[in-house]
Length: 282
Image (cartoon, rainbow, N blue to C red; front, side, top):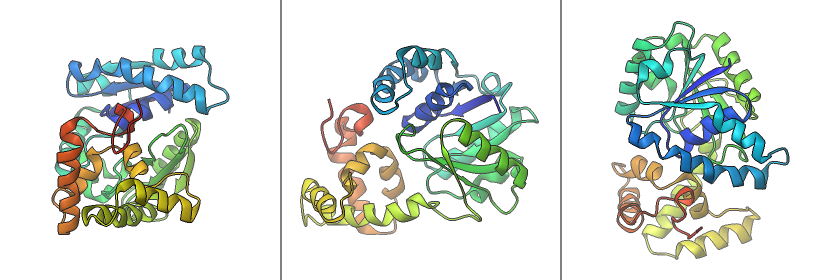
């Protein structure tokens, strides 16, 4: 599959587009407006030095060639006109994802395979909205895809295995370690392990048990982990945990979401990709 369309150009969507182009794929990056898409040029300039820092084979010439393989479009039919694979990375809200896939399914070519990058929702929650449930599955990337390079491939009961095989092969072609799940699992493998840690840290912070820096330092010292939970939040970005927890049935997680909005999101502290979150990176 050579032609990729990425729906949504936020933190993960832009990373997926750039990683695919870096590995030789032709990419169309779609978002709702041209105004949003104009921000991608700055995003590519942000990613280039990270690739140079972290990947031995990265060169300025190779990075410029990656950018040249990415086109942008705010016209969904145009963006999908020759797509072999579509990866959706829109906000983690079920209604938004289902609406996006209903529109995509109506205009995508017959050949196109559909993949959601949802971090918490199941493919079976969304697949019927696409109109092609047999071609629908999840391909989940961890943030900083050029470094945390796993691609979790998870179908639902109605996914034709040939399409899961094709998506796993695509993941490997763009430098991912393809992880195949045998059945649906909320949070896949990575988030099934990670979310309990982040939840526990969030509650400690919301209860004012300790400052977030102390919580992070405790975790790093006690386990040898390179990142504490709030450093991980900065990598993920503030909007995803806020969207997930703003309407949580757990009052402590709703309180944590309120803290995120008041003290971070409303102040433009959206995470490491924007230069500041819990910590300052500028």
